[in-house]
Length: 392
Image 1 (cartoon, helix red, strand yellow):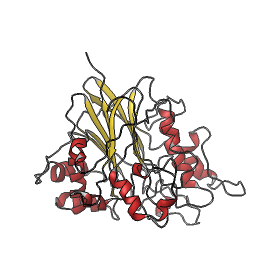
Image 2 (cartoon, rainbow, N blue to C red):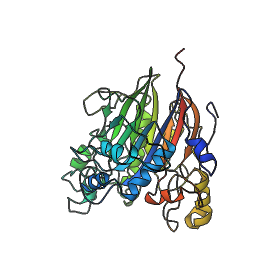
Image 3 (spheres, helix red, strand yellow):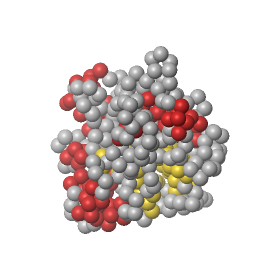
Image 4 (spheres, rainbow, N blue to C red):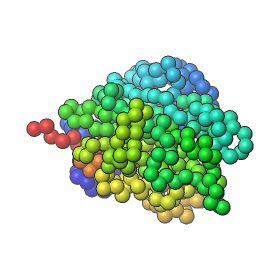
């Protein structure tokens, strides 16, 4: 499957190994996975990484070893200052001997602080009592909960990396500031003047693959739920997604944590990845949130990842799934069938300057030997293969 077509690679019984094979010269696989390793206590992930036998981490490692992404974003992977979580994951799970699966190791990694669990000192949820997890700059019980980790087989230009964790929401033109039904402002003047847009962070990581630089643009916007009529989380989710839509066309209002202004230069190659918490047809997103990326002239969204497991899950589970408009084969998450249903929330979207080869979702159907791996997260790994430009 070549070119900017709607090619999909469904991870079914016999197709699984073929889809995971990634040996073609110049072919690079990017992926995102919400691993649901945002744990209830600070330091808990460190202990489980050190153990080497944690069931959820073993499942994560088997999924990674099967899909074999070259560049991977892991969402919901707690950040702990001073602890090399990537090194422990590599050493104790990915590169450790395991029967039947070839080891994999990532020489280049990126981890950094996020806004989750960082106290704001303000009453952000409007309950009159500051200090709860909902009053942090991003919902969290401790700093670094639900963090992000990037693993790469290719060099990450750390000097060229940009973080936008401290970018203020108010500095986005026409920001969707939450308001009350009487048109009053939900946030106080002080809160709005200090409010950070990113619920976790936004990172631009230049990855050097031979002579080609691809900017890996990663984030994890807040879910558009757990709020009220003011839709504060839905509006924030919309604008967190909008940030990348503006960034890839070099919007001048943007600034990073080092004070550098502007987005990507014209012609830059990039891949936007992450659990965007927004479905194009279903769920609780604020109007057209993910469409800002899917309809961008700078982004090739023609390859829609699909899986046999997602279609089967909808047929078996029923409930809210039966009322949805989207194609169930494209779902990347599995939620309550009484309320939400399964949704397409995870995306790997390339620039139009990259040649798309294939894409898919790791969601093996029931009866498959690896079906049990999906029980450890309510999301599924989503991947995309691109062909690098010829250097001849």
